[in-house]
Length: 250
Image (cartoon, rainbow, N blue to C red; front, side):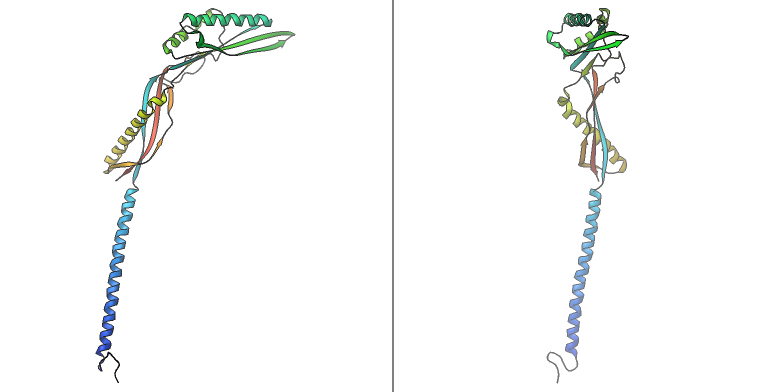
């Protein structure tokens, strides 16, 4: 007796196995194609991701010469005597001399303000000596007039005012916020120019900004820092900022 669906010579069974093999081969072909395509797409994606990771980090510099818009002069002076009242009287006279000095230069009365006073004593061989110190501060936005005052400071010395170490004019630039945006933009352009030069040398092109860090703004004397007793600060300043930018390249 023969099985249902099979011939006596077994040709039905052979047909069944042939059909099963074809199905397996078809499935394997589909899977293989999928693996090949997936591998290609994965490799291509990794390559593009690797290219996307390519970048160059450069620094951009911006500098600007400015003139200070605020002058501050701290004036310290003192008088010593074995008589406290005498030392105090000398300091009061010096104070009047200093006020007259600035009035003659055209400064308003409120430009000069007292900022401190001090009395100290020292006893040696039974004799007590008193030192009275006074400090005044000039604050003005009239830079030209302030420079004139500094150039004539020895007029005070010639009138008997003893200027102590630490007395001196300092100049400040307080309008930094007004020039910050322009300087940051300038530093960014400088950084891009450096990145484009790198890209040209390496046969690539510059893309967008991946990351950026703005450095601190610094304000320094344009012609070098002042230092030491008797060396005046300069109203001519140099503002400087450095930015660090990461550009993508491809």
